[in-house]
Length: 315
Ligand SMILES: CC(=O)SCCNC(=O)CCNC(=O)[C@H](O)C(C)(C)COP(=O)(O)OP(=O)(O)OC[C@H]1O[C@@H](n2cnc3c(N)ncnc32)[C@H](O)[C@@H]1OP(=O)(O)O
Ligand SMILES: N[C@@H](CCO)C(=O)O
Image 1 (spheres, protein in one colour):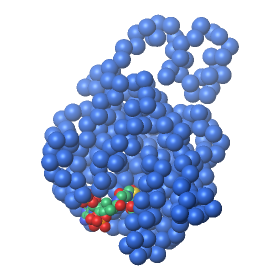
Image 2 (cartoon, rainbow, N blue to C red; image 1 turned 45 degrees about the vertical axis):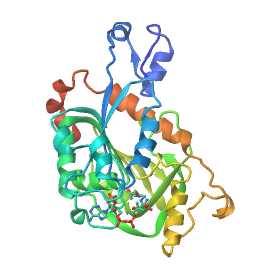
Image 3 (tube, rainbow, N blue to C red; image 1 turned 90 degrees about the vertical axis):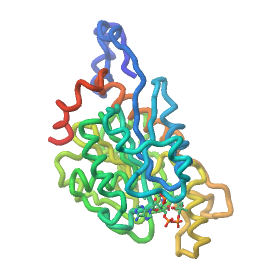
């Protein structure tokens, strides 16, 4: 949250140098709060699990948040019933006239296909183009991040072997980045993917900044565009304690050659209870996004600002 303190208090300069927004007295009393409108494009197969994971984190905020969900019309999801989708979800066609403070594009188990072979690729491209003028800030997760980096910046994904699978140690790559305010010097996040985006490809794009990286195979973790209206997150801070276990057990049962998720089970023993090390990271990451990049930046009247700020997505 922005903070109001006595004018000219010595702490002001220090806090401002750390990117903490100190309000002047007049502005503090002009603040008026309305609910933040967030759209979630849920591409995960078991929709209810991902809904719960994301809503748990978005709900951890003093800011009121109103969430709409959409699914893809160009690909009919097989693991969620049409009745469920009809009751709880809309389609892009139904929401495209609206404007949102925030947009989340989830992961999807389609990362081993070329983007263009994904049945809903054209629809996702349309949503990503629309987002530039209809959503103030977009948070892309895992395949959603790969898709966004490819669509907006031409960055390709590459296959990796073995699968990047486990809970990896991370560090920050820039100081005083508000998305990571309150993070420790080292923190843990789960990753689960067969593909990666490469640091050298991202560094070639002037409009992108790497905010955080993992040790070892997981590589780049968080990327922002220059205007800080797009975030690309390659890991799954939202995952439940047993999500990786579920994926591991599923793949073992299917007879796949899969390594034990790294840094997850005590002594790498999959018969033991996994250790959850990323709950506070997840809560902080989503709270920071909502606070600093949605609530504090989005226009009060959503109809007013967007078209004029379209250019802010690029340099
Ligand atoms: C890399 C990331 O972003 S991580 C996120 C992905 N991880 C997860 O979703 C973990 C949970 N998922 C799972 O465990 C598995 O996908 C399961 C068990 C739900 C389904 O597995 P299977 O039945 O073997 O796979 P299936 O062939 O039916 O396809 C699975 C999903 O892939 C996607 N998919 C498959 N083919 C296509 C295609 N041509 N175009 C678009 N999506 C496709 C769909 O999302 C599909 O699920 P949905 O129809 O319910 O949306
Ligand atoms: N997290 C994914 C990776 C595949 O896209 C899974 O294991 O289901």
